[in-house]
Amino acid sequence: MKTVFLFPGQGSQKPGMLHHLPLTDQTVKAIFSKTEEVLGQPVYDLDTEEKLQSTQYVQICLLIMEVISAKRLLEKGIPADFVGGHSIGAFSAAVISGVLSFEQALRLVDLRGRLMQEAYPENYGMAALVGFTTGRLQQYIDQHNRNHSTVYLGNINAATQQVVAGETASLAVFIESLKEAGINKAKMLKMSVPSHCVLLDSVSVALKEQIDSYTTREPLIPYLSNHTGRLLRNAEAIKKDLWISVARTVKWYDGISLLYELEARCFIEMEPSGVLSKIAEETFPEATVLAMEENGLEKVAWLWKNNQQE
Image (cartoon, rainbow, N blue to C red; front, side):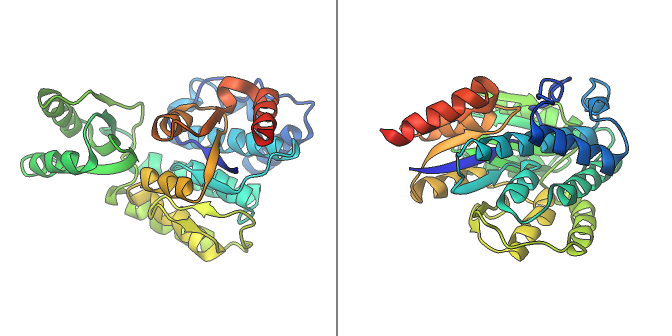
């Protein structure tokens, strides 16, 4: 049974999220130490309610927590056959695949979040939608865009679950039109940035320049691309995915469907989220799906090992 490590994106952050990680754990100590060395500030200052209003600090905290989660699982003897990160989670996946060091990923994520925040400090955002197929949704997007500020398809997360990006005023009008059309769910997300569309092309260019300056390594674990939904097995392709995906639609549904076709039957989501595990659970009801946030390290390790023996 092949195992996938899933790394969530923005939206799962919580104030104090780093505080419960055990400082007695050597992996936690090492990651915290490197973070403080690179950023020049205490780790426990990063996950305050005030700091988490900023896209920059949200992304940094997610990287820290996700990398620690995965490394602790690996130390428990749980291997990953594939890694897949949603949006900012891709940088954690790149660390665990072996392409980037944690320090390289931290510097890239710090730059990414800061540039995104500076580009769109207000009046833009994203909305989550549930209930329409992507084809049907695209028809409503096209119709809306003829008369309003452009709404972009940012994420395709499941067969009937997507996220759109754009100006908040335009998104509000779009949401109301979808509700009138009978969509199950349509709501604004707690995000001030229109991610995964051409509005972030300038951020993409800056990321490319930075990542191209790094010496990277070939992946030890195949990595799931955000912008193509395909598996990547070389460093150059993964580097491209990391810089280009911020301005391209995330094809998550295509990607996890491919992993299932490749015999992935255990999906483990890193802290601090349960969003990707819920998507996997609904999409593949016969698979084993575990969330670190819900079960904790010891229980996930026990459940995984028991599952392997069946």
